[in-house]
Image (cartoon, rainbow, N blue to C red; front, side, top):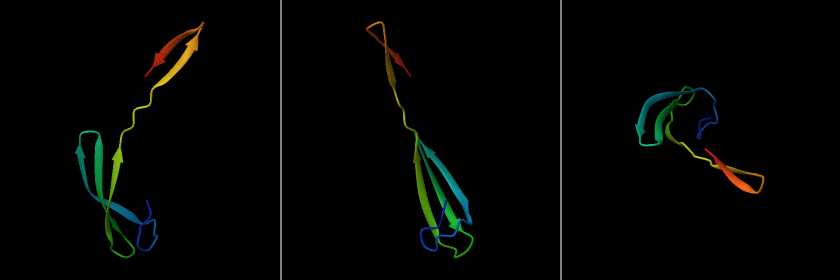
Length: 59
């Protein structure tokens, strides 16, 4: 993860919080000290295929 202020890749996670399917992380840049947050959300993708004219669903 690069710092949005100085573009340094020297960032560390300070706090991690989970709420439902979302993870929020507070990060600090080791170069300039800027603090910023990132959010990660789990995505569910469903795939369907056809076999012999019938739709077979996969999770």
